[in-house]
Amino acid sequence: MSDRRGYYTVDEVRAAEAELFTRVPAGTPMRRAAFGLAGVVVDELRSRTGGVVGRAVGLLVGSGDNGGDALWAGVFLRRRGVRVTAVLLNPERAHEEGLTALRAAGGRVVDRLDSVDLVIDGIVGISGRGPLRPGAVEVVAALNVPIISVDLPSGVDPETGAVDGPAVTAEVTVAFGAYKPVHALAVPRCGRIVLVPIGLRLPEAGLAQLDPAAVGAGWPVPGPADDKYSQGVTGVCAGSAKYPGAGVLCTGAAVAATSGMVRYVGSDAEVLEKFPEVVASSSISETGRVQAWVVGPGGGTDSGARDRLAEVLGSDLPVLVDADGLTILSEEPGLVRGRAAPTVLTPHAGEFARLTGSAVGGDRVGAVRGLAEDWGVTVLLKGRATIIASPGKATLVNDAGGDWAATPGSGDVLSGIIGALLAAGREAGWAAAAGARVHALAADLAAYGGQEAGAPISAMPLLGHVRGAVRVLREIGGGSAERGGGMAQV
Image (cartoon, rainbow, N blue to C red; front, side, top):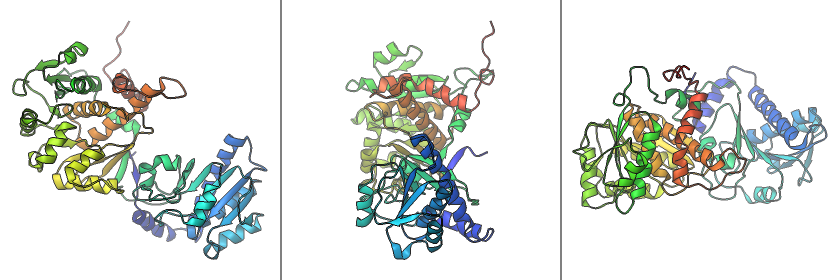
C-alpha cells in the first residue's frame, strides 16, 4: 500500500486514458465517470435536502467530454427521479450522444436555470486553460446554490491551481480516474474532493502528498534500546535580543517533536525557563555533539549571524535554514549551493523572491523545483498548500486544510519540528513534508479546541498542540503503547 497520494499531470492522465480505451468498449470510461458523479450528487441531495426524488439539479454544459460527463450524469439522475435541466454554453459543440440520452430520459435544455437544489459544473475539463468566458461568468454569477464540479472547478488551472480571472468555487469536486495537481494546490476552490475510479493504470506520480497514516507510522518514537542521544540531538541557533521569542518557539518545537535531545545556542534565559530540559551553550563550537542544525529564525543578519550560519553550513550535518538565515543566503548563496549534506530551506513567498530574484508566480511547483535543482537543496515553500521539492525526487505537497497557521512565529515552530526529524535521521523531503503535516494539524487543534467553530490563534498555542498532533497521526498510523515501548504496568 502506497504511503502517499499521487497527483497526475494532464499529459499523464491523457496517456492513461488512451491505454484504457484499448481495453474497454467505447463510451465505457465516460459512463463510469458519470455514474460515479451522479452517485456523489445523490448523496449531496440527501444530506442537503433530505431526499432525491423530485429534487432539481441544473447542468452547466461545456463542449467535449467534460460536458458529456455532466450530461450522462444527468441521465443517471433522471433515472433516480431527479428533475434535470441543462444550459448548453456551446450548443454546437455539446456532446451529441450525451445530449440525446438526456433528452430521451426526460431532461430539458433551457436558456437559464430556474430554481434548482444543486448545480453540476461541466463547463471546462482538464484540457482547458484560462478564466471563464463571459457567457459562463454570467450564468455562474447568478447561482446561489452549491456547485459540484466535474473533475475540476472551471476556470482553475489543472496543473498549477492558479486563477487569473473568473472561476468556479465548488462545494465538491469529483475527480475521475486520478487526482490532478489542482486537487492539492487549489483545495479552497475545489471544496471536498471525491475520486471516482474508472480503471486507469497510472505511473509513479511526480507530485504527491504523504498519507497521514504514513506520517504517523514513520514518526520517531523511543524504542527499548534508545537513549537521549540515539534518538537524535537537535542543535538550535535561533533568536536574539531583538527577537527572543523565535528561540523559544523554535527550541520548544524541537523538544515537542521527538524524544531526542535539544541543544540551544544563545543567551536567551527565557528558553531555559520554559524548557529546562534543553542544554544551552554560548557558541556553536561549545555546543557539543548534534545530529542536525536549525539556524536562522530571529537570529539577525549582522556579521555575527552570518558567521554562525557559515559555521553550521560548513559542517557535514543536516541543516535547516529559515527566516533571517534565508536573508543572508540571498546575499551569499555560495554558503549553501552544492552543499553535500542534506539542507532544507523553508521560505515564504517573499523570502523565495529574495533568494531567486523573482516572484514565485502562478506555477508554484515549477518554481520550487527550479530552486531545489539549481541550489542542490530541499526547498519547502510555505503556504496553504506547502510545496517541498528535492533534487531528483518526487515533489511533495501538503494542503494544510485551513489557514490557522498564518500567524507570526508559526514558521519558527515548523523549523523546530523539521529540525528534530532531521536529527532523528529522517530523509530531508520526508521530514519537511511530515513536519508540515503535524504543524498544520497542531494549528487546527489549537484553533478549534474541540469546538465546532475555530478562533484565531498565536504561535504559542500552536506549539502547545504539537504533541497532540503527533498523537493523532500515530493513532491513524496504527501506533500503540506496545510499539512505543510499552505502557507502565499497574
